[in-house]
Image 1 (cartoon, rainbow, N blue to C red):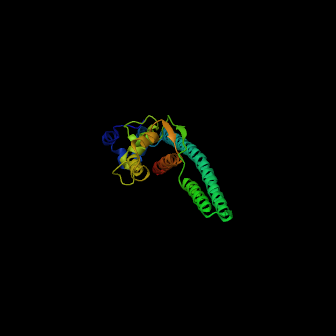
Image 2 (image 1 turned 45 degrees about the vertical axis):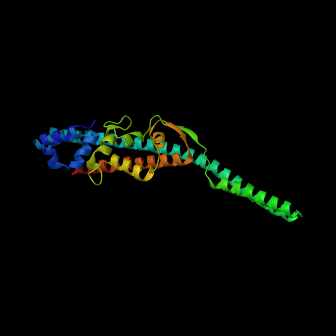
Image 3 (image 1 turned 120 degrees about the vertical axis):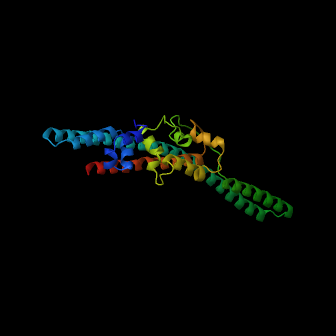
Length: 265
């Protein structure tokens, strides 16, 4: 678990801040290797002997193993996000295909009615009757074409009791879904590009401004609750948000690699 008092811990012993950057130290805190880094520095301060050299090697291996486990945890959670995104996309594609078949049938029906109306109008001798047939056929054809222009309201039940989007939206202090390592990086301001707001707050702001702009409270409950009746557009939106999260989680591996490089110097 990351230390909540990391700043106090670093002020108590400046040997870590002299050797590593704040970014690397926070990444070490996120992955749980901060105490091991401190122990390694203490070993490096003692006279170099055979036993000391062995202890240093063992300590470095312990740190590397812990970072390898952290990388595995990141990959596992990113895979879960990818799976959830694919699940939403597959259902959205299913609804899109049903809508495409519906539009195709209505379009064909409109064309057929138009053709039949044209032929019938040409064959009917009575002027009034021809006009009635022409107007009626035109209205039917226009109605079918109009229906084809609108998307269907078909929906499907889609549940997600383990909602991977909810904590990013509600921003709790502790996440019930995200591993401590990932949640610490997403909510610590230092890891964002600006350093002013956290990665999770930036993602939420993008969702609010670009993805969910104009959505009702019911729609937001649909995305961040336990599920409900989803239409195709809703499923595409959910898949996009999951993909954004997946990219942010995968990028944490770059911070781990940076810490490994600093460890090797």
